[in-house]
Image (cartoon, rainbow over all chains, first blue to last red; front, side, top):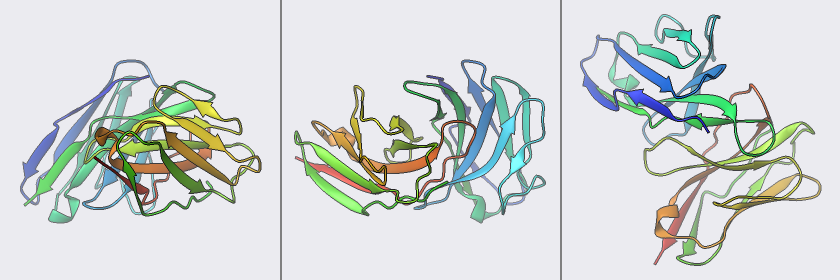
Length: 117
Length: 110
């Protein structure tokens, strides 16, 4: 299974600033996903990022607020722009990869814990 | 993707089997049942998935009913480190997002 790392692991930011989160995978993968987990809540998909195409955003998430880059098959970034305290969450990168059993499986990174003051 | 229903929480004694149920009565023929768990604020960890046959790996067993409308995740010998939120998700096997519900909080007690 793919091994995923994220940077930074955590950060404390001031409102109005932006933070770029990096996701690195140890193998080439076609599909990468960015999720958000607000305090006490379950995970929600922000967008799907495929290499060579524009990211596809879920309802309620827009490119101006969460721009995503996917320059190659092992790397992606998510930027949280013009942050407010409501953006305080865990941001998680996941990838789809061949795994045990039939079909493909999604694997998750350790997450980036963001606190906005 | 089909919705799933799970109990809010369950307790299990350390060393005993933990049986976590999931209902997915509207599952489609090409949708798989996936199980993940999330240990306090870490990234979700893949456990197991299956289509219609029972599956077993080093972590757990997945039992899917013949009509595929429900399944059970079995942790054969629960330890304190298995305390986590367990998510049952159904989706097609490739390319679709994972839709996370509230999951089941499993508390393993000594």
